[in-house]
Structure formats: C-alpha cells, structure tokens
Length: 225
Ligand SMILES: O=C1O[C@H](COP(=O)(O)O)[C@@H](O)[C@H](O)[C@H]1O
Image (cartoon, rainbow, N blue to C red):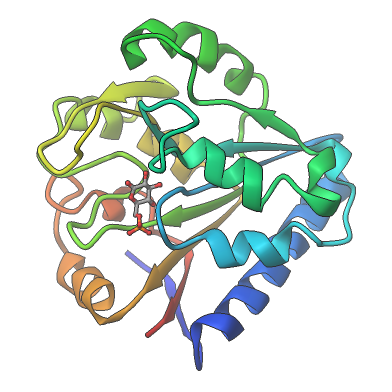
C-alpha cells in the first residue's frame, strides 16, 4: 500500500496547492483525450479547494464533473453534496464543465441507479479523482459495515451502488472501489489529527475493515492540521 503523504503548513496552503495540482492533472489529461472526468468528494472538507479550483485556467468545457458519492437527500438539504459542488465548484471558469448528477428525486437510490449510472459509463476511465475520508476510514460512501461493502470492493463491482451503513444517517449512492481506483490520478484530502491517526491506523488492514485501502495505492494524500 504505497502512497505519498504531503503535509502542508495550514489548510489555506493545502487548498491553493491541491487546486493547482488538480488543475495540472486535468490539463495533462486533456492533452491526450477529448474529455476528462473529474471526481470530487462531498462533506465538509473540499469546499475551500473548490473555491480555488473553480478559477483554474483550463478548458472546462471538456471536463465532466461528478461526485464520488451522494447522500440520498434533495438539493435543498444542507447535507446535499450536489449543492456543495454546484455552489462552490461549478462557478466562475468551471461553470463550463458538464455535471453528471448522482441524485434524482426518487424515494430510494435503487430507483435512480440505472438512470444515473448510464452517463457515467461513457466517461470511464476517470481521469482525476479527489477523495475524502471519514475518521471511520470510509471513503466516498464505502463504509465499514455497509450492506453492500463486499460488492463495492469486488474487482467486478458495478460502477454505481446504493449503500446503507450504520455510520451514514441516510441512504447513499456511491461509485465502486475499482472505478475510483482505476483513475489516472488519485488524491486523498484529509484535515486534522483524528483523520491522520485514522489513516495510520488503516495501514495493513483489509479494505473490508478500512475501505480507504481499496483506493489509496499510488495516490497522493494531502493533509493539514
Ligand atoms: O459523508 C461523506 O463523508 C466523507 C468525509 O466527509 P468530511 O465531512 O469528513 O470531509 C466525504 O468524503 C463523502 O463524500 C461524504 O459523502
């Protein structure tokens, strides 16, 4: 399990430099392909990175942006990852990107799976993935103890799965581990001592216990206190 751990002086420096790296990865991908798919996390961590990345000078009209996972809540919920991306990333220059949603107004994620999954198949393999991680070592919505954990980690996992987990207050929809892991460039964003300790604690554990380990190989982990 090898990854590069990059420690920053503070969260502001991390946000500026990580946004620059992501923009650089996207520019490189666009040199070789017509379009590039960028996966981003939701939750509380990525907002400041989005604030910098949205102004990056690159051909956003050739970028497909999608979340790694979504909570099954409408866009007016404060827990909507979609709303975070729409308000903090898909603005300024990045407003030209195409957004592939992971939410549709059905009662359950299962009802939306086929409709939401189809356009994603067309943009694989992913060019650039930015992931978050919870203190319980979950990434995207691949949680320890989740009902579809084994399926999400399997080499032949479907692209998209509905997920329910004790650690998640609402049903989820998530890209599977092999789809995330297959990206050309992978970055993991963590803030704070608790998550740093959790990542250390994940070392050597099987992905069934520490799902982050299913995607962390060859990635760059970006940390600030
Ligand atoms: O629920 C989620 O949690 C993780 C971590 O979020 P954070 O608030 O601790 O940064 C996030 O990566 C994921 O996208 C989100 O749905």
